[in-house]
Length: 205
Image (cartoon, rainbow, N blue to C red; front, top):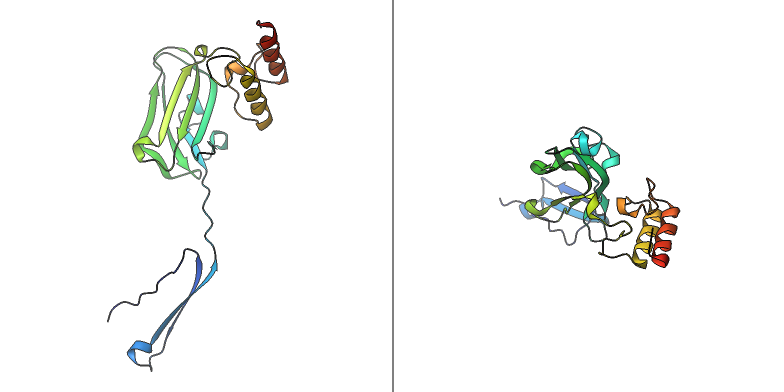
């Protein structure tokens, strides 16, 4: 006898009912009824960076929500940390984990980075779940001194666009880059917006 085949007409959630009548002839012994009861809801995963304490503040902790990545409109996840102090030849290692568990983690071998010289760095890690394994992760550590104060959107010059970007960061509670601290004080606030506008009007900090 061949296997019974039940064809699913469309994606969804189904109730399946199988009946068997031992008294019926062979072609009528079995019935299989699929009743669709709902639609499939896409699973929204959480992605977290977990690695060495010198960058992430916890040691290989997949459950550390402080290291959750932020999903962009393009589907790519980002983790940012500014003002990181690295010693010369200091090594960072990490993986990106799914749903705060080690069941799924990338890359297969730890991603690692070694600072070429001591200094303060702005670190950005991206993760693309849809990419192949070789291209899922990018890591960028840029010396903080490479950014000009006030160039919040990294366009290469200071303009009203930087004011808009800074206000957006303050309203959304996102990570604020070091160059956004336009009043020389640690941490960004409305005072930095005022300082940036003053600079645009007067040409000096």
